[in-house]
Structures are given as C-alpha cells and as structure tokens.
Length: 409
Ligand code: AMP
Ligand code: MG
Image (cartoon, rainbow, N blue to C red; front, top):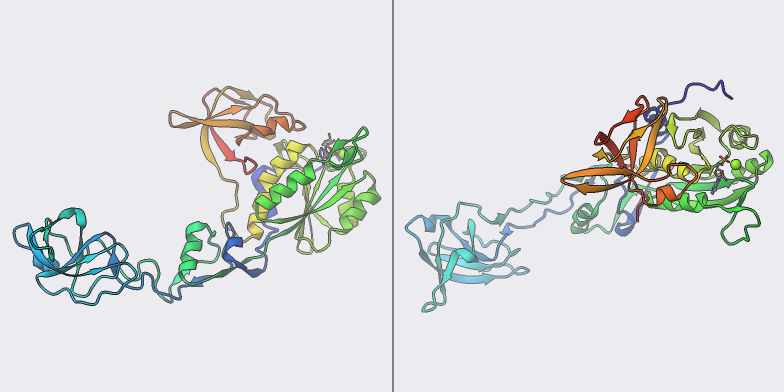
C-alpha cells in the first residue's frame, strides 16, 4: 500500500469528515439533559419578561419633574413596594414610593433613586430627602428587556449553556427540542488485548475502548462497547457486523500496514465506502474514514495516544456536528513555546504540552516523551501544540497555536 494517494492535510481530512455529518433528528428532552446540546429549532418567546417595568435598585421611585430645583428635595413616601407585590398607589407630584429591587414600578414614577442617594428625616418618618436629580429611566429595568412574546428568543443551533437554559425556564419551558445524541459503537481489535477483569497472561489491557467511550460521553454521545475482536479477517468482520443501528462506529488499531491489519478489508467486505485513509499528522497518521448509509465509520490508530489525539481532532468535531452544534472545530488559543522543537517537514505534529500562564501569556512546555504508545506522555497534557506540516523547527518563545484538550479532569 506504499503507492497510496498523498496524505491528507489535517484541515482537509476534518472538512471531509464533517461533510459526511448532518445533525441528527430532534427529540424533546428535559432541560437537565439539554445542557451542552444545540437547539433543533428556533424557540419563540411565549411570555414578555420582565412582565412590567421594575426597579434595578433598592431605593425610591420618583417623578424626575419633582427634582429639578435645588437639592435636597423632600418628598412624601406614599407606600412601600416589595418584590412579589403590585403597587397600589400612583406616584403623584410631591410624592415617591419606597421600592425594592425587582418590584414593579408604580405608575407616575419615571426613575429610581438608590437608597444611598437619599436621607431619612427622623422628625417626619413618612418623608425622605432626595440628594440627587435622576434622569428619566434611571435604574428602571424596562418591561420586555429579556424577552418579548412572539420574538425569536433563541435560534436553532444555539448551544444551550446555563444562561440559555435559564431563559427557557423563565418562559415556563421544562423541555426543549435538540438533535438526539449520536449512538457510538466502540470496537477494539488486536490479539494482544484483554479486558481489565481478565488475567492478562501475556496480553495487555484494552485501554482504548473504555477511554474512547468516556471521550464519546464527554462529547455528548452515547457509547456502546462492542468488545475486542481478534486479529483475523473473520473476527473483525463479525464484530463490525454487530455495529448496525449506530450513527458512528469507532474502531481502534489494525489500520496500519502490518500483516494483521484487517480493519480496512473488513469495512470493505461489509460494504462500507472508504472515503480516505491516512492523514498527514503525527500521532494518528493511519486514520481511515468510511460511510455506509448514514453511519460514519472511523478507524482510529491503535496506539493509545494516537487514538485519543485523533478523537480530539476528528471524532469530537463529527459528534458535535451530529449534535447540531455550529462551532465544531477544535478550540484554539495562542501561546508561546517553552523550549525548542524540530522535525522533518511533511507531517503536522500535535505535541502534548503542559501550558501555564506566566506574565499574561500561555507558555507551552512539551512533555518528556512524545511516543504515540506512551499514555504517560498524555497524562499531564493540557493542550496539543500544532507544529505545522511544512515547518521543521520552532525556536524558544515561538508563537504557537494550542488546542485545549477535552481529556483533562
Ligand atoms: P496496531 O495499529 O494494531 O498495530 O496497534 C498499534 C499499537 O497500539 C500496538 O502496540 C498495540 O498493542 C496498541 N494497541 C492497539 N489496540 C489497543 C488497545 N485497545 N488498548 C491499548 N493498546 C492498544
Ligand atoms: Mg494490531
């Protein structure tokens, strides 16, 4: 297979994978389950909120026309309006109302003076001295500031964070429409693998499947473990045949050029159309991508770090697209390299780094070992440093692009 087509650049590989993904059909879910997901439809406001002009301060609701002369000006206090109560009196000239934050503004008043800008009058407790002349509208939260009945409150594709859920709760909503969660099958392949609860007997524990399952769940998908397939074409085919009904099928290992790498052949035998194989990155080069019906097949490399890096660069964006999120590319922040890096041009390297803030900048220090097989090199990583394909060296202090990792605790 050494005459395989040129390796795809990482951005192109991601764009091609995203091109195979469209948001899944919507379902109505309770708000608690909507956090981090995207709205499947525009949501219109059913209620105008706040329902009335109300006070932004504890203080006095006044008529600004009463306060144009020399200060202080003494006003008669007509009533006290608490939040949760409706005012009963109009504020007529020469009077005001004591008012608490969130309480509806009485008619006649057109501004609020905060309590700190007033002085009690001990000899006349039903009056107050006002120490400032407010402009009209001061400290009034207008009716409809948060929402107006019939307006689009939140658009389709909006990620539902905590404030967005708050807006929907305020509308009296208890559930929302969001694309359903992607169902993701996870299969490990390799004769050398055993489950964590088996005596190893010369084998190593399958860490990829449980790690990928956690990454899937953290990205918003629902993982199902398909177990471990032995390194025979039949075993891999049989295991993959059990992956019907999933939106995404993730395999790990068996996608390189070794004699026992059967995943590509098995996919082909099951009628999965191969879209591409191999990306110009390290770690993670042998990624294979295929599709059958609407199901996306992603054959990740076997090395534990490679499988996690390819998850971050390709699988997580795909899951986010299926979840209807618009912002699916890996996040990026800029930082500085602490130390030096060199490599041959040709592959983009994603270097595991630990980044810390110093003097207003994010300094990224490459971790000791960078081999794909060593999970240890990923264990303290906070970011992946993008060492571009065409570059061969990065000097100390270079400005670099960093991808925050979703793996971190
Ligand atoms: P392969 O792509 O099959 O050549 O595997 C590459 C490397 O990853 C080998 O050293 C495997 O032992 C290791 N490996 C493959 N699958 C797993 C797994 N599920 N958990 C841990 N290590 C794995
Ligand atoms: Mg193998």
